[in-house]
Length: 68
Image 1 (tube, helix red, strand yellow):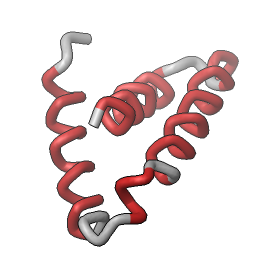
Image 2: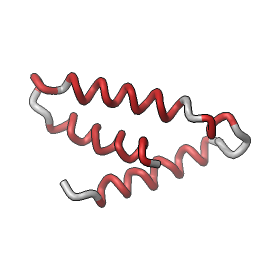
Image 3: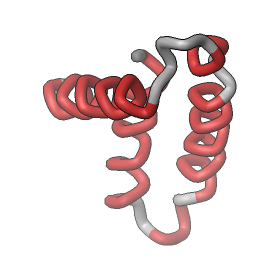
Image 4: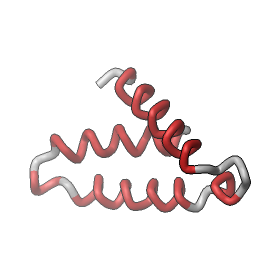
């Protein structure tokens, strides 16, 4: 949950960053994406596409609730 929430926060920062300052955000998104995709949970029977969607919905709401 934390990694997916951080992914949305980082993506939001990337979207508003000046074009000369996007590299750190892109690197962080790649790190987070790898971490999320490689998490052992997704190799279990519970790691369904519906579970991924639920994670993304919860994480997006948590990211939007964070103070900016």
